[in-house]
Image (cartoon, rainbow, N blue to C red; front, side):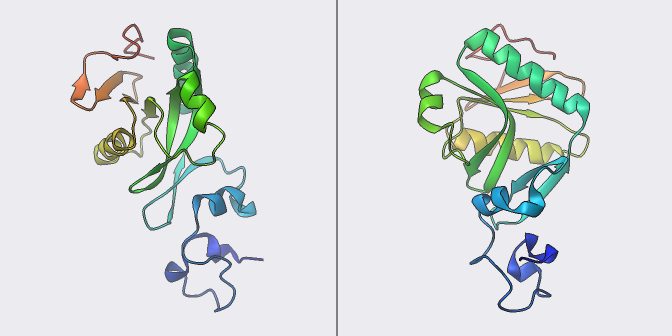
Length: 181
């Protein structure tokens, strides 16, 4: 049974005796998903490019905005929208707060534990702990992995839309989507 210190990488926890590290290198996203100590945590988990686990607390206002955005996406576009979607990026596994996918995309990729490409729309709902640099990095990562748009919902519920060309006045995919949640 892995010790509690085995949650991150072996190199970061030299206190784990040789022979007790259950993983060959850093934990993969599948290892994180299946690890019994990481199930049902009251916060969001992501991984960086080195396999380290990043954790962020969540709040009810965050969850409420996620739900509203997912509902509105399906009302405006059909398809499927859901929360907490793990996406493989060049900087590790990131978990978009909300994603929207066309029926075609959903049929192809939705059952995978980590989506190999970003869905057409990825949405991040800001938390007080998020930095501007972190959010800009997520925009870049999701667009690089195939998202057509990335939306940011700030602490006041204002939604900003981004495409490959930069910030947009409104969504090109859902032009009637409200700019405030």
